Length: 238
Image (cartoon, rainbow, N blue to C red; front, side, top):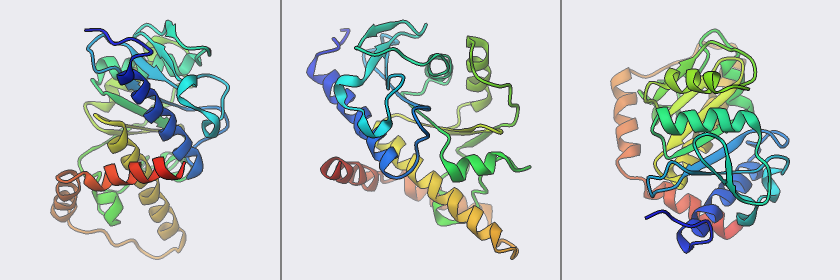
């Protein structure tokens, strides 16, 4: 059954999406009024929730969230949406089959997209290891995603990964739940920050064996209660 925009289920999802945006702003992960978070409706309709154009993440509330379809048409909500958001998020939801899509230009992760490696070394910090085997790199920068073909190219470059580092651009973090995806977004930036700071010392970096990184990833994903508790704490705080 298709869920209505004002149904209790959708109001709860809108509130969670707005909370994720405010929390990201609180932790310095936003950039002006740019970047977007989206959450696909669980009713199989292909519709998804998205933050609107022109609002700071810090001010977004549940009533500001809009609902659009896979073609980018606004179905409900009082605000317009930004074109690149429609093209990128619609494609990742449709092609990547991701329920929650978080796109940011957060500083340290974006800094790594400017390097020759283009992304995170998942054998360095413990925070980085949670992403071992979950990361893709899209090294081809084509300018702003102002048409559906660029959104589709980005989505295909993910090849099923939960995280994609977009060369010279930013990152996309995906998940099946907003609290799990937000937790990954936060710790991705922390991992990238540690790598940038370590590299800035000029000393050689010391990775672990890939098998250890894989084990840490499995340990982290095997028990996500910590992610849920973190999101609940953000709800109390923000």
